[in-house]
Image 1 (cartoon, rainbow, N blue to C red):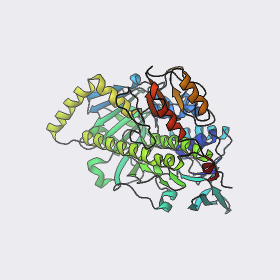
Image 2: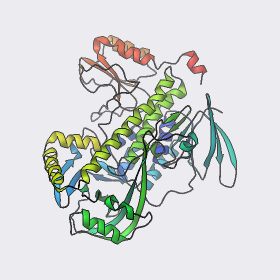
Image 3: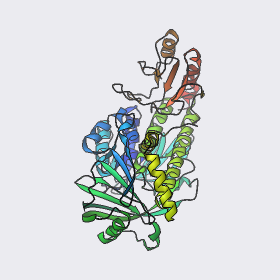
Image 4: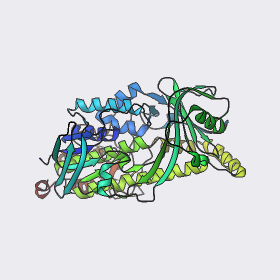
Length: 501
């Protein structure tokens, strides 16, 4: 039957997407060709915005209960502190980064999904698919040689950097892919006095390096090959290779000991031109891959899933602007990925300046910038991803720069004591407004699309309509409430829309 969403890949991206769709009442199947979880975890960080987006589903509490909280990010040049950013000032219930190995994150999310009645089909591989205007016919290969044909409403490829779905679609990067080489080691450290609540990044002409805590009392060292990339060999580097990098780029007097994992790997950085081909979508590393600086990759993929889930759920039920809504997924998420790539590129350039005069100028300017509260706040909000926005989305309402922020496409912080946006069994918009006759009429007319309760307005002059993922959909002055009414009318399905499902 054409009533299931098929998800290929059971990493965090696929698991979050499946859980979001299921809590919205959409039937899903999740297939994963790997029979077991990976033993080691490259991804560890879950940033503020990710924890916010996972809260409506109830997953955040279980993750926070097991992770370690990181509160400060430091930048050094050798032993010289250039600047320090404290995340405590972020307007959020989660003003920190959460450190949790991806393997454990996957276990928690798998259990969460099972609680919603969905079991991951491990060892089941997507072997092929064809799409038409009404759905997707997919072929699955199960353990033991059994094959199965599945008819799906939509197919989403959450199958990683080597995505089978992406290759079948023939989708390519919007720009030429860039390859970088990296070293990683989980070790004990002697010397350095690194706090277990801090991320430490080191600028050096040979390349970038970061040191941060991992569970078990150890620290992770991650560094790019930098100027020595020509001597790079993927695999399991010896500890003395890691020690050499640590001596060259670190503060000195630090010894790496007792490694539990060392890894040398290459990353092909890309951002696919389109995340959608009809009834087939890409999410996470299947759509975009970034270098490890900033630890954005896992988070970006989860944001993809949250963005796509509420749109697919509305499309599944029938919505007047279905195609525009689904097309907005690529437009919104690809633009964010491009900004992340640009930010990481600038960070890498700043970290690896070679000219001594330029290094002096960089360090001086860095001291000045990080010495100012606005600079620290901007960096904290960028790293934690709360500043990401969808400013040019096709589903944004009319923007009026004379009105107070946040405007269409921007995040709305949830005040303490209020529930997160997007909770409940169906995707609903939130209305931030003072009570009144016209507001009450709006709530009654669009009861199926709006949360049952009003939320406090951010300004008595204005009304905000907030999407299920916590970004402003539209806003207006109270006397212009017809703007909100017209916006919501675009989501009311007609008989023809329902018949097309």
